[in-house]
Amino acid sequence: MKSQTNYDKIASTYNQRYIENPYPGTLKALRGILSQGNPHKVLEVGCGTSHWLEALRTIEGVSLFGIDSSFKMLDQSQNPEGIYLTQAKAAHLPFLCNAFNFVFTINAFHHFTDKFAFIKEVKRILTTNGKLFIIGMDPRDNRNKWYVYKFFKGTYDCDIKRFPAWSQVESWLSKAGFKNLVIQDIEMIHDPKYGRNVLLDPFLKKKACSQLAMLSEKAYQQGLDKIKDTFEGRNGTDYKFENDIILTMISGEK
Image: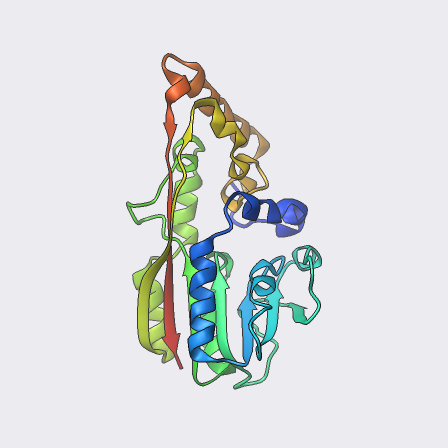
């Protein structure tokens, strides 16, 4: 199993995930934070196709910036007008010190090769009292019950290595000098699939999520076969494929 996802290869189909699940809790949290803090320069790191930046475009008085390491992901931006996009690595942010009031990353932190270096870089580019928000999941959280981990060998073990525990992230933030740390759940997805309908799940496609994209074709097909054997077996038509995901947000202030 590969250790990293090649997002250039899956860029063309990436936005399909938001058709199935627009993550309303995440958007609500972002809008709430921006409306309360009144920042005027906002940066998303790991912005991908700029989905979230485009959703925030209607907030007045905010300049929106995004960086991603994949040029093809950036090229999929649907309406980039007024959003400043740059290809760059999270550990080397190409901005001056004290440049932003607000930095956030959504479901991308686990991809950063040097997570602590990213946190230190954010501390550098934030203004005094500027804030960093990291949004994602922790596969160790026993509230997360995702059938992909059960049917595709190695996906859970790989995610344990890729996704740091929230306690580790909190430790990194404190070590970098961030204060007023807050951890809270912002999105609780409960969307089980039953029987053959699991094949309609857009996240089951190989390029739909990093967990499956990193599998070899053989390993991916073996997982699909296990799923099919399950719902085609006795009483399998009513088999419940669990799909509970908790997204958590940790924030810190410079």
